[in-house]
Image 1: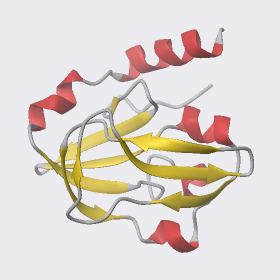
Image 2: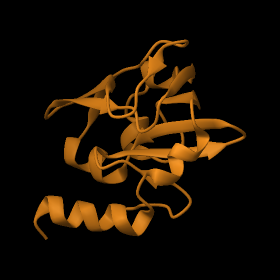
Image 3: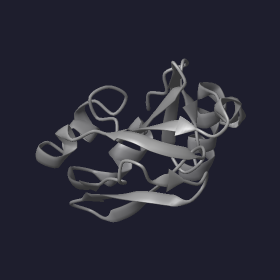
Image 4: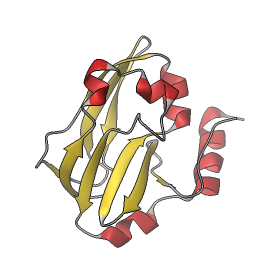
Length: 131
């Protein structure tokens, strides 16, 4: 069973978002990391980069595939998780913790509310996997 913490919001492209103190932390979901397998490299956005909701902002490479990472909301990247440079496996071990990707200051903080809640996201995953 895939995890989807109820305090987070989710994009259908399998990114999660947590809004705290006006900053959104973004990572990929447990469903996504499980589908990818062992993550070996994460291409991060640049600090100061403008992210557009739904557009590619990075890449995750695993032993199975390379997939794009999309911005769940629009905003300016204010921090990246440098720990992933030396330990990309954090994405597999702690997708909702130390495996986060980047933080951005959203153009509209309320846009996070437009993302899926945990129940809706898990339903989306079930439909996508054909269960």
